[in-house]
Each structure stands twice: as structure tokens, then as C-alpha cells.
Length: 315
Image (cartoon, rainbow, N blue to C red; front, side):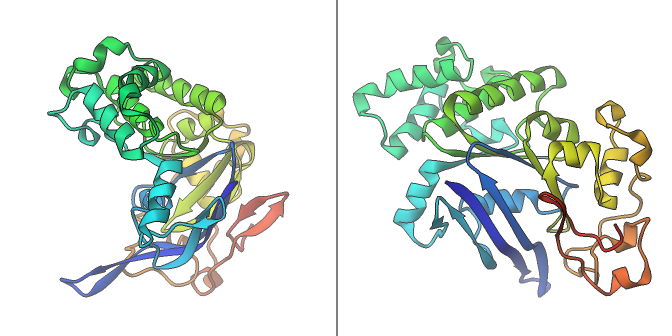
């Protein structure tokens, strides 16, 4: 069982202006069962669009996404319902993910009913089980979202996702909206759940420290493309692509870096407009290694060492 993303593109047409936004541009990646794939990049690089495509909330403009050999197709309702049971998404903002007029018990029970995995007379027991599973006191079941802390609300959202008994969880910035003091608690919960339930994760973040903490492999995205892919040791301790190096150099805490002398200078300039993608390498206008040919020829991902992939012609 694995997730296969093959040459996925996603374009959005702005009908008012007649322009096209290029959100994903030929993304290919494979996630093995039990792995945690971390996806990192600046805002607007396509991370969340890819997440929504994986769970079937977005239809790729080109390419394909398969989970356990079945193509994700939101036009095939029966197949999509089965996919949603196996693949769940946890959003960034837990407060906006919960109905403010609904008690926590009803919010989780509703999700349980949708998937039909538990008999109706057992739903209350299942709610209790899920609350305990995510480290919450079952007595909180009668509270409303505004009566919980941010960390507690995110745990409720995780419990809702687990109610489907998924195999794959897509976590889109799951701790970025939380106080620093509770981020580690939620991260440790996610690690424990993965071990105890045998889950596979896609963990999306702009925070490399969080990505390093939880990921087995990391994909670095820039303007809708993967520019580097490898184990966390390769990406964090031996980055190759100039963009990856710049992201690491921009971090406030360099203590996670194996060799600080490898750091490139921090990022300069603005991300190009996804409506008018630059020719050649999409990073060349901000790259310290760029040569004239970089603005002409787009590099492809190539294997530089046992699965460590890089899209750069100058390294």
C-alpha cells in the first residue's frame, strides 16, 4: 500500500481577468506505508493545494494520484467515499474546522455516523475512546469549541479524523495556529498515534524544525514543483539545492544544522507570480548560483545519491 503522485498539475482560471494560476507544476512523489512525508516551502508554493488533491478535494488538471492502487477521482462518488474513509485531512485552524454551535460529542459522533463504521448504540462509547486516544478528558464532550483551548480543539479535530479509521492522515500546518507551549504536545501525540495505529502521514509546514521532528522523508517545494527530496538527514544536514539551503539559513535556530558552513545566504527578492511563471528554472531570479542557461532550461529531478533527488543543473 502506498500513495503515488504522478506528474500532477493544478491550474486555476481567474474568469474575471482571464489569467491562469499555476498552483502545481508536474509534482511526482511516492509515500510508502508507515512513512511520514514532510512537505516544506514558502507560502503559495502549492503545499495546501497538493494536500487537497490527495484527499480528493481538488481535481488535478493533469496527472494522477493513487492510493493503494486506486485512482483518486472525485467524480466517482462510491470510490471517493471509500477513499475519504482511508485518507483524512486535518486543517490548520481547528476553530474554523468545528461547528461553534455543536458540542464536542456531537461533532465527533456526526463524523462517526458519516463513515458508518460503528453501530448507533456504540457511538457514545466510540466518542469516549477517541477522546482518550487523543489525550482529552471525556468530560469535555459536552463543551463547545469556544470553551476549549487551541490545543484541545486541534486534538478534537484529530479525533474526528481518526473516527474514519484512516490509513493516511494529511496534516496541513496542524500546529502553526497553536501557542508554542502546546505545539510539542500535539507533535508528540501525532508521533504516538502513528506508531500505535500504523498510520502514514503527509505533514505540511513552513517550519523546518517541525518537519525535521516528525518526518522520515522531506520534499522541498517551490512554485508548484519539488526541487529537492530525500531523508531528513539529507535535507537538513546535507542540503544541495540553493533554495533548500536558503530556507535553512533563514531559520532563527541553526542548531539543527549538521554543518553551518554549508548554509547559503538567506532568500532575497519575491516569489515570482504563479500567473506568469519564469522560463527555465523557476528559482533562477533568486538563486545565488544562477547562470544564463538557468533562465532557459528547466531542470528535472535527478538522483544524486541513493534516492536523494535534486532539480538543479548547477550542483
